[in-house]
Length: 268
Image 1 (spheres, one colour):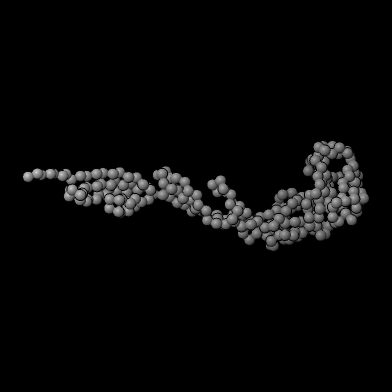
Image 2 (spheres, helix red, strand yellow; image 1 turned 60 degrees about the vertical axis):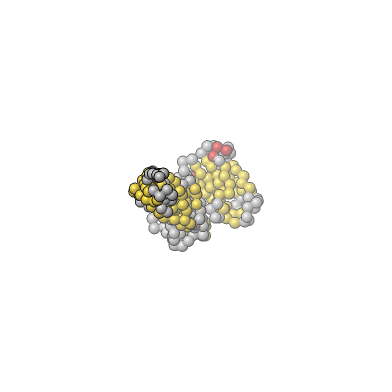
């Protein structure tokens, strides 16, 4: 008699994975760490005992809800449209860490424009009523929250508009009046001819050295022309107006100490 003895066998496998693992030995999917055993019969009719030592590490996730104006930067990317965005990195366990950004982008209101319909009144166009805030020299004026502002002090005026969503836009500065310039000096400023058609001359009380800058603004508060302080070397300047549209303009002189002189100019 020929006798063959086949031995039972046993195996052990250690596995570390993220989230879940499907063991081919029994086609079972595991989602928790543990030690699992599967017993089967080999082709030789012996017992095969398989042991799985399983470590499950979990992926991680987070969600952030953001409302922003115009754009939002997240993970070195700038987004300008609302949407749901994801960013995947690796957590301390070596598994995926998925961050989700739920983003709402609201557009800022159209930049407001300051006009001066009357000598002592400023008005706003392009502003989303009623969210206005007037400023003088960049400081908010208490209670100045309507579409017009009566001005009683010289300075640089601007207006900030706020949309329903809380987004803001601010106008360009609009210079008003004279600050800190003596009456004697005022009499020496000359702007002629005014009205003008092609050119206008500006005479100042003293030679323009390093203490002045001259600017030209249109009726919408947009600066059209500027001479840097260090380039001014005469007490009379010629400003060309031939290519400008007919209407109201302002000539501004800015002193290095912050004083401002302005004069209305009419182009015909």
